[in-house]
Image 1 (cartoon, rainbow, N blue to C red):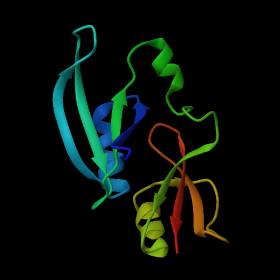
Image 2 (cartoon, one colour):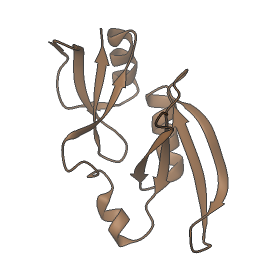
Image 3 (cartoon, rainbow, N blue to C red):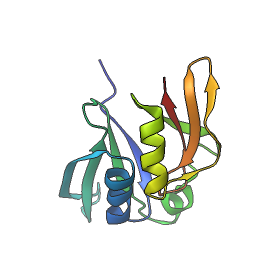
Length: 129
């Protein structure tokens, strides 16, 4: 048993793909036409870190309720955790690509970490050794 994917509600597919692929270094696994449960057109978009098994479904907000949740899926808490092999290299690459960090890197018992904000406004921990 494993978690195959998690969804992040985003405002727009292409901007979210660009952020996750270009800024974070994820791979675009799927981007294909699909349908909502009631038959309307949408896209099925999945990204994931290279070599990872779990993907992130980039789900474009559909309606007022979902739009209200963009960037607030975890109600202001860090809700996503990206572990990297080389913290310093990943941090520098992300800064160079415009990723906004809300904390400076710090050393904790579980490794070096810093909080960044994704394209939708959600908080993530960047974690490394």
